[in-house]
Length: 254
Image (cartoon, rainbow, N blue to C red; front, side, top):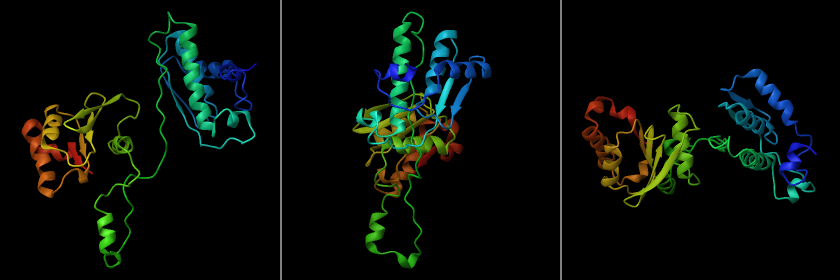
């Protein structure tokens, strides 16, 4: 029985998975324990399991990036009947199960083993596409453009879009907290602090400024008027006087 069927309780969720032993050998030949393994056709995510197992065995700190199109599973397949609608869902579940299995098999030596991963989906821009000439606009259209962000985007969509714009890595930790009725996201301890709520009170802006983040982002529609938006920059200048001359490069209103 192959490694994948063992993880999925003998269910054949993927045809012809690569043997983990073979993948481990490839990774070990190419790295010394501290590298990034990327698989552009990751399938069921075998390389991710191989990386975690090698790290458990030799104390390495390898990382993995798995890339896979969400190819649909055949509706007559065991995978589809088990609840996996596409290959990506199989890969995500495999990584979860493999990580838990590795730690369960060697609990004394894998206490610090990192088996976490983050799932990101490629999409188009968060901003609305506006290609109309001035004469093409109507009053209804203008009202619909009060917010320049697409209606179906979440806070996390906006947060990770900002990370890409600023060239920040997408794998670092972040946390969210409630602050005076608003949700505030802090990325990697202050590399970026963002609040995308509507009607952001000045108290929230001041609290964020006092933390002196390297970068801060707010949503344009979070402020009722242009003076309120301008005031954001003045607040940051007040609490970060050492960077007052460069504040527009560190604070954005999108």
